[in-house]
Length: 251
Ligand SMILES: NC(=O)c1ccc[n+]([C@@H]2O[C@H](COP(=O)([O-])OP(=O)(O)OC[C@H]3O[C@@H](n4cnc5c(N)ncnc54)[C@H](O)[C@@H]3O)[C@@H](O)[C@H]2O)c1
Image: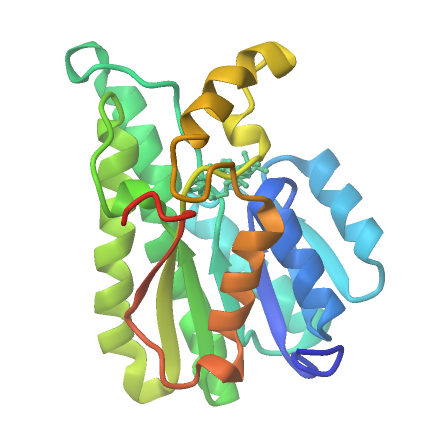
């Protein structure tokens, strides 16, 4: 891949203010795409877009809000033209809570941000992609979309749903030349897994990672590489797939 790989492409990356989303937005821009970065964190989102420069625009966006999605597509089309790539990356991972202690409102919020968002995003972006003659969608699920983790019922439900929704969308959109795949990160060193309290609080997470086949956390670029590949023409025969990027955790 080089600076021409995504020339002419318009990519939307949600949750692009931080972690995997920020790394992905920067990588798309470096490879020639125009990028719409979205996030609820307006300060950091705008900062990342400024770092990228002319090829980027930031849009304040709550991914669980259907009206917000319409505005994002409008900004993308008005700024750069029809959308060709969508990365549904924004997400939340609440602290582990046993099933009997989790309340309904907290459960619903995780489902809305991690799961409903993917439905709203794919539905909103598809007409733009169809008008352009096709496109690619990458949904960021998790190892929690492939295997269960204790104390994570809402997160696991939301990420298994993303795995399944990806496959249905791949079937529904195949004839429109839109490919849809999911990526399943393992433990990745982003603010999501770095508890407040600095290195001491991160130590148990590093300890857990040291027991994995690749005995360390992944870095955001190592997930962005997979997302960008799935969005590229190099992945032209891939749709409906679930791709673990987890250092062997689920092996
Ligand atoms: N870091 C990991 O170990 C890991 C593992 C598996 C899956 N993932 C998944 O990767 C994705 C990115 O996570 P990350 O690790 O980069 O986390 P992160 O916390 O660094 O970034 C997530 C971003 O999503 C944004 N966001 C949260 N709620 C939002 C909303 N309602 N609307 C718009 N934006 C919102 C946040 O502001 C933040 O910028 C998530 O879907 C996460 O579930 C991460």
